[in-house]
Image (cartoon, rainbow, N blue to C red):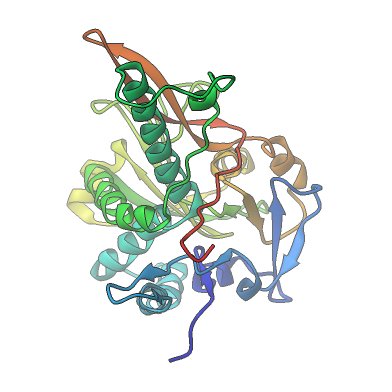
Length: 326
């Protein structure tokens, strides 16, 4: 069997909807020079062996997950065509929401956060064991060794975590109501390498945190489908959605589209993706901002514990995992 090396975390089936007439998307890398890269979908948003898993008998399985996701992605383009035509797609909501949930769980923004959370937990445990005298004394001159320790996590662990993340997204899906908005303005919707976003709309833009909401408060979920289509989930739409299912709406306000795009830009992890070169200034405003993992030590009942959050900030380089083969 041919071994697949290039695994897409943003599928070509999704990116095709954001292509210009030349069949390319404009990729603005947050660590780049501000100039977009015009790329065909097959040449962007992938990593080598991103979904590879160890086999029980040894070696790596490079194909199973990539093939599975490819099968699921095949249903996306015809569904988008039906949405563009404003057809009743309530018979295909499972496809819609499963695709969206996977696009939250599979991306580096999510998988990196899981691995960094596990790394911080391991490091904190080592420090606690040292304080409790359960480790040998640190070598002379290396008193800060544990503070400076870099911990890398086997990426296979974040593949396992995808199941938990998807279940969490589906719970979110079931808690709100949904509308697809057709964009009637000249300002296209942007997307990113982390296209599923949710936040607390009762807070100001500067106070909002990524994926942080009050359990009893309002929430907005946004997922760009194309430059002209946006899926929105919101607490205020819940009653209508229960009665009538997925409905369509129209947007005629450039300002509203710009607000959506600002969220897309700051939720983007390593890249923002556009169908045009007309929105470079807005994208540049968020070049140093991504949803990143933050861990803080807190004292609970006299014991130290770690508090993990996702916040807007600058990405740091994740320690690279080295397997036994290097």
